[in-house]
Every structure is written in C-alpha cells, then in structure tokens.
Amino acid sequence: MPRPRRSSPRPRPTVADREAGRDVELVVGPVAHGGHCVARLDGRVVFVRHALPGERVRARITEGGSRFWRADAIEVLEASPDRVPSAWPEAGPGGVGGGELAHAALPAQRRWKADVIADQLRRIARLEREVEVEAAPGDDARGGLAYRTRVELVADPEGRAGMRRFRSHDVVPLERMPLGTEAVAALADDEGVWVRRWQPGARLELVAPADGSSPVLLVDGTPWRRGRPDTRPNARRAVSEVVQVRGTEHGFRVAADGFWQVHREAPSVLAAAVLDAVGDVPGATVHDLYSGAGLFTLPLADAVGPDGRVIAAESDARAVKDARRNVHHLPQVELHLGAVDRVLTEGDAGGAGVGRADVVVLDPPRAGAGRTVVDAIADREASRVVYVACDPAALARDVGYLGERGYELASLRAFDLFPMTHHVEAVAVLRRES
Image (cartoon, rainbow, N blue to C red; front, side, top):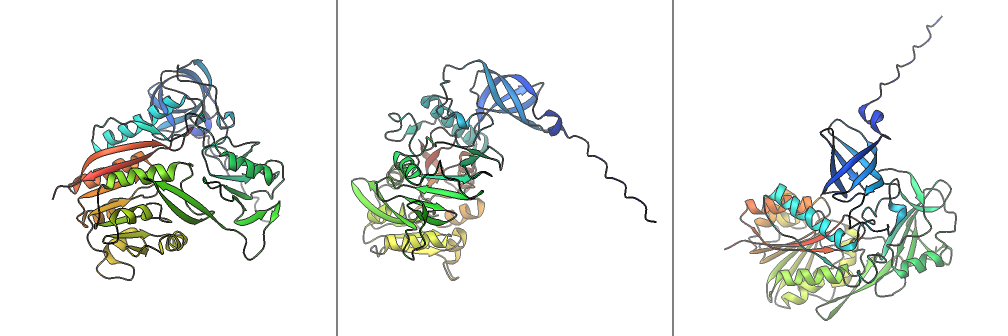
C-alpha cells in the first residue's frame, strides 16, 4: 500500500507579506524618479505615492522588502500648500495608474519634474543643471486635463471598460477618462464605451487626431463603427495627423494603433524644439534615429533643403511603412529599416554603414539609446547631437556616455507633455568641438 504523500510545508511569510497592509505615519521628503517621494521609517527608505514633499501623512505599505518599502498616502495629516483636490480621484491610492500627480497643482507638478531631471543629471551624469519645465499651449486653461488624443482601456471580468490598477493586472472599471481630449470623450460616448459590456479582457484603443479628422476605435485591433466591428476590407486602420512647425503644415498618415505622441500639442512642440536645437543646416547631412512615422523627418527635410540629406533609421516595420508614405515626395530623405546601431554601422543590407553626419537627432524609447548606439553616434563625427528623451534617468546615463566621447551638454529644455503624471519630455543639445 503506497504511503500517503506528505503535504508541503506552508511557506513562511516574507517581509513583504508581513508588512503589506500596515499603516504608518510618515514625514514626506523629496521627490524621486518614478512618481513618488522619499520618506524614512526607522532608517528604512519608503517610496510614497500620492504625497507631496513636506507633508505628514498616514500611509499604507503596499510592498515590503529588505531594501525599501512602497506605500500609498491614504490620509494627509499636514498638507502641502501645493496640494489641491484630485483632478482624477480614480487614480488615487489603490486606483489606476496614469494620474499619480493629480493631487498637485500644475506649477508644483512641473517643479517636481524639473527636480527629478536635475537630480538624475547630478547623480548619473555628474552635471549640475537648473531645469525649467515648460507648459504646453492650452494646458493651463484646461487645468492640465483633456490633452490625450489616444487612450487605451481594457475590459474587466464583467466587461466594463477601465484601466489596470497601479502595479497590478486587476482592472478598475471607469465611467470617464479626464485626460482624454473632448474628441476622445465624444468617441467614447458615440460608441458606448462606458456603458457597453465588452468581452472580458478586450483591449480598447480610442484615437482622435488633434486636427479634428475622423477618430477611430479599435477593439483588440479590429476597427469598430457604429457600435459593431467594421469588417469591410477598407475599414479604417489609420488616421491623419497635421503638425504645424514654424508656420509650415506637415501632413502625416499613421497606423491608428502605431506610435504617435499622445498630447495634442506634443508633435508641434517637440518638432519646433528639435528644429531650434538643430539650427541653420541647409545642405547638411542629418541622421534622424528612432524616426518612427517621420514626425521629425519631414521638418528636418525642409531644414536641410534639396541639397541636404536626412538619413532616418527605425526598427519598427509598420512605422517605416507609414514613414515611406509620409516622405515619398522628399528625395533628400533616406529611410532605413533596422536596429539603429546596425543601420549606423552596417546599413540596411550590410556594408559600410550610413557614413558621417553633421547633426544627429535621436528620439529613443524609454530605455534610452545605450552605450552601443551612443558609440555608433559618436563615430559619425557630428558636431551636434540633439537628444529627445522621455526618461530622465536614461537621458542622464546617455549624456554621460556622450560626455566620455567628447560631447558637452550645451542646453536642455523640458516640456510637461504628460500633466497629472510624473512623465516628462526633454530635448538636450550636446556639442563637440572639431
């Protein structure tokens, strides 16, 4: 007769298990990268969300650990003068991600982001730099709301549209998304996004171009029209975008679920900042790296003129397909599909790469460019590098790498293109003397 199996011993509770859910009183310290402030409890670092520097709060530990804890401020005992009623309570403690600064006045949000950029440059790149974060046009009048032309939602187990809880796969059902533009809100109402019951787990993408052209709702990648899937062969899967840069209007056609700047003013703001940073470059050779659908490629082509060259590199095949459509009338533009470091050193099909550049513009993903790409950029011998960054830590790291190759940080502008969140965009100019 076989022996009965011995049950596995119950695992001992970890530090995280024991501490999660505990309420503590904290005096909140400075801001830190990632949307939280730093506090200390009995010598231990606690990263606190939904608080502001200088506040005294009652906080609930959400994650314990041997090195640091995470917590949410659930009661404010002594408030900062920068605290305001939350513009989006659903993004408060225990709520959805994507609105972690909704309890801070807009000027305080921008100071927060400026402090983070300056701190990352100081810690990682060993550079002292005062930073000012500029508001996008119209944001102050709108209270920092109604700026997103693209909103992604997911259906909860009951089919209600919502967003995921912060650091969780759980979905919080919503009845509104106040960061979406008026056109996004109208699209949601027209298609019954908030009242319809969707397939649990369905992914909803609402896209409403800033110029007022026709919006698109995608459900799990399928276009919807008038409350049902649009199965026609010619169903719209792309949108038109118009960007004004220095008085010139540039037209783009991009996949509805492809990458495009989400703030209604971001394409114009960033393109203008890039052109300012590039300077006067008729006849020059400019490398446009991580070029996407061509947001910077078209204005750069105008800047270099018919006697110049813009060499664009992008690894996403769909984005390059969009870019080919957008730049087909510009013979001075070369598009290369492939990883940026390989395009720089080998070209599309192997060989000597794409040659030298007078100026390099790069807009890498959140992880930044990294050492390999930075070295390949430095080998192009450009006198100027214009770096568009959405992550202060990655920017500081890559500025440090460029510094090792003889480039100095000449200027930096920062833009608040994600109000109510800790995210911020920056345009850095690095120069190397010949």
